[in-house]
Each structure stands twice: as structure tokens, then as C-alpha cells.
Image (cartoon, rainbow, N blue to C red):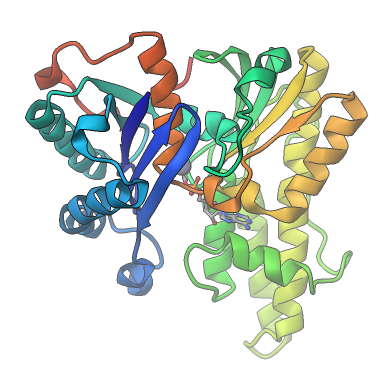
Amino acid sequence: MTILAIDTSFEDSAAAVVQETTILSNVLSTDFSIYEEFGGVVPRLAREYHHKHIDPTITFAMKKARIIWGQVDAIAVTQGPGLAITLEVGIAKAKELSQKHKKPLVAVNHMEGHLLSFLSTPKKRVKSKLTEYRSGFPAMAILISGGHTQFVYVNDIGVYEIVGETQDDAIGECLDKVGRMLGLGYPAGHLIEKLAKEGRAGVYPFPIPMRQVKNANTSFSGLKTAAMRVIEAAKANKGGRLTKQDIADIAYAFQDACFTHLIEKMQVTLQERKVKSIILGGGVVANTEIRKRMRQVARHHNVPLYLPYSKKLCTDNAAMIGIAGYFKVQRKEFVGDIDTLDRVPTMRLG
Ligand code: KG4
Ligand code: ZN
């Protein structure tokens, strides 16, 4: 079963070829420099970028996978969540290719892609994880990205229940915004991680949100405001300029507060639900510190921790859409009337 997958949910033009859960190619075309002066993604510019790059990205993905159209069994495309005007580009392309090459189409939820990316296997790996994963259900999945912070109870592949989520900003969005306040580039999550390694504990205390609220919802906007105040106060103390050590100390304190909050809420979900494994997905999972803390939680609960085998599979990519698409094909969840397929920018799991 060979699937060509397309994702244009945000700033990356992404295409991939997967065979079941094995990645044959996974191509990403992104240029953050076009957003430099704006400090974040501009939807109109992202759409223009996709228009220019989606065709060569798909062609390159097929070439890298050494696949011709005759060998493709289905096309998978992200339907949502994401930016409406960028999702449209990928969906229009998928429709066009589906009709031209007479291939069935499946519409995928981007967050299901993140959730199932732990199942991806590299070409070289002979044994797929497919045989072992079923013993890991029910599972608790933690999806942490630029747009989402969700705890998802996974009964089985395709059967999801959101048990907690952010009430305001997503964790990645906050890392990016605070990174901007600190004068770092975009996206800033990995830069905050790097700086935090040089930062000292206890220099800047941050309050941990929602400790009194005994549910699994999270909130990050208060931490963002606290960071703004800390940065302003530190600048005022230092004559308007922060030293490298100040920036590192703030990065450490902010990252530490975000992750402490996340882990505390994860503990709440694990008290409420008995699970056989923990799954991590989303761009923030590329962070070594959060992986370390999640590993401790899994050890404490004596369950395995599943996460993507490479950091590139944590952040946005089309291989994860291909894998989620593969399971949809197996369940025969094809798009019936291709003409009516439309983007769903606020699409939810479950
Ligand atoms: O999953 P993703 O690529 O896109 C969305 O679906 O949103 O996640 C992007 C987010 C960004 O906010 C980025 O700053 C964050 O993931 N991120 C990280 C790291 N690498 C990417 N955050 C913390 N540490 C990292 N190493
Ligand atoms: Zn994503």
C-alpha cells in the first residue's frame, strides 16, 4: 500500500511517500526568512509560497521514493486544522492529482498525523512497529505544537477523546512569542531550548498556572505575560540591554515553568485514566528536556513511552499525514464526492 501525502496546513509545503508506516521519502520546503520582518507566519505569504513550491515538492518526494504514479494506491491530504488559505492549496492539488491519475483520496486530520507519527519507521528498519503498538492501547497522547496543546485518550487508532487542552495559547506559540520578546528568531522553541541549557535555576521565579484547578486543561498565556514583565523589569535594571546570561536565565525559567505545568496536568490525566502507554507528538517533542521529563513520568507509571524516531518527525511533515492516511484507507474512509471536499481550519480530533 503506497500513499502520496500532502500537507500545507501552515508554513511548510510538505509531501511524502509512505508504504504502510514506512517512510520512503519526506520532503519539506520552507523559507522562514520571508517572515523575518513580521516576527511570525503571514498567511497570505505562506499561501503564495505553497503555490510556488507544492508541485516541485511533490515531484521531488516521488523521485526520492523512486515511485511513479502507477505505483501510488491513494493520496492523503491534510483537511485541517490549520490556516484556511494554506490548507486550500494542498486540498486543491490533491483533488487535481486524484482526478488526473484516478487515485482515491483520504482527508486527514493534521493532529491525528502528529499523534500517529510515533509509528513511522525508516526505510532501513525491517521490523515495523505495527505489530507491537496494539498492546499499548488504550494510550494517553500528549500533542504539543505551535497550534495545539492537547491530552488525547486513544482507545484505538481512529478512536480519540480529548481529555484536556489549552484554554488559551498553545505551548509552542508561547515559546515562539517569548522567543521574539528575547530577540530570538522564528520559530524560537529550539533556540529557547539551547539557551535554557546555559541558564541558571532560581534566578527568575515563574508562577505555575492552574494548580488549584483539578482538571487536565492547561493555560500558557499567563506565563507569556509573566515573561513579558520579567523581561521588561530585567531590562530596566540593566539599562535597557539584557546580557547573554540574562537571556539564558529567562529562557531556562520560562521553559521550566511551561514544562512543569504540562507535566503536572499530564499527571492529572493519568490519575483519571488508566493507560497502557504514553504517546508524544508535535513540534515541541523535539525538545530534549520535555522528552526527559515525559520519560520519568512513563517510568513512574510503568508504561512504555512512544515518540517519533527522529526530531524531524515531531515538527510538521507529510509522512505523518501518509501514515494517518494509510489507516483511513484500511478503514475505507475515502472522500466520496471529491468536488465537495473542503478545508476545516478548526477540525478537532474525536
Ligand atoms: O508541530 P509543529 O511543527 O507545527 C504545528 O503544528 O504547530 O510545531 C511547531 C512548534 C513551534 O512553536 C516551535 O517553536 C516548536 O514546535 N518547537 C520546539 C522545538 N522545536 C520546535 N519547541 C521546543 N523545543 C524544541 N526543540
Ligand atoms: Zn503540526
